[in-house]
Image (tube, rainbow, N blue to C red):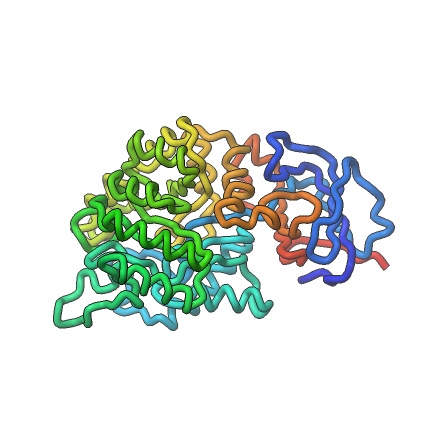
Length: 418
């Protein structure tokens, strides 16, 4: 159900969290003109002059939420349940469903950090052209790794079963190959770059935390990305790889599991964002207790990384590291992104700060804060509504009743005035 794009719409919001103010406002009128928020007024103004009216007097209205770490097209399954082979076409088909579920749960913008191909880039374009309902996607395309690194697609395969992957396929060694890989992502149409500077939990390899990019290699990533106006997101568990990435000037550290105080200081100094993905940590820790869920080489990594993530989050928040919301959905199920808010609040972040980390802070990380991230006049009309007050109970974000993106209403009820 969409509204007529040329009409003016009035929303009466019982409560408003605008993404910037630390205060919840009450009884607010929001005017949307086409796809732009044109006015915000105190009190409930008369709906007579408006073609469309959306009554959210018993709801809290918030900016559309943003998740900086999703993987549409995949969801981790146990060894027993996992299909023997997964075709790229199947990933693409599932990705459209993952995007829709995420969108309906209130996330109007996401960053897909890592893909096996052009799935998210293609999905982004299909959504942007209005062919499908879904969030705005900012995509990194194929993740870049070094040989044997967390995003080397040939890990765990017999030597005779694969051709050595080239930089264009996202495996690089040395700064020259880095340039080839970044330029290929640009050619593919990616919005940014994702690199794996340390091992990973779910890769079929021993270490989850050893450094896997040299300083020279990660410097080259940032310098190449800057040439093409792309952001750089960095998968990192171990502190050494993380510090190299922060010194190089990357935009965000994902997971940051074994971050030490020196890494935190460097992040504060460089303005680097931390994307915690606590929910993925909780998920893998839980599943590591189950026999045969993970391959045995993965199991100890999952058991140790999980509990550590929330501990690191608590310390980083207290220290003043900039935090942007991200879940790693695609490890756990898509559409459960809201659980991250609960974990953030349980680990010491005030509810309002957690919401801001998924609105204004994420917009800054994506460099779109002039258009999105808050409910202010002149910004794009991305809004959601929930019953109840998320500041009193953050878990109400599980049930999103209304999603408006780019001025179009996708959920909920509205009235036409004639």
